[in-house]
Length: 257
Image (tube, rainbow, N blue to C red):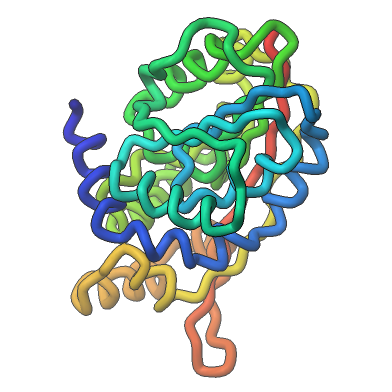
């Protein structure tokens, strides 16, 4: 297993419960919008890749015949299973799975979902190819992830900031690059909702990954000294005594050719 994947398991194994209870992941506006856009059907078999706290699988499971819930990190998957089963959901199975090497046959699923996870993958194009592989012809990929501006220097600064907080972070992509990756995987993008603003409270965001006081200080310094383009992206400000900033999130819906 790669160093990045080991870091993912270490980081998320240690902080699994924090992602189950995270309001950003549980209540993000993009989650309900993803369900609306996908329009899941009762006879579908679905796969949620890199489920994290299980919120996406929980949102879709009532609308499909069967939901397979997968994650690379055993502790995270166990926390997601406890959370989902605690909601009375029974049409679910749980399986450890590497997004870049999914342990499923070709054309198994009518729907694959992947939310707020691609930026952790060492080889995002390979993961998208795997998601396309396990989809039936005409099957749907419902996808959401954080995105960055196309300017390389700005994107690099934003990704550096994210990686300092979470060493398992690999790379957030511009929307245009994501679309190319989808097309190269044999997926036809049918809908894009790009760069929706997502508000973050600094302390909650940093504590979710167990950041030290020193790391928090450096993260704040990076916000304070950022270039105009990076500050325009993050929009750091203090509201009611809390340091707030913004990131961007994009929804893509695609079908397998």
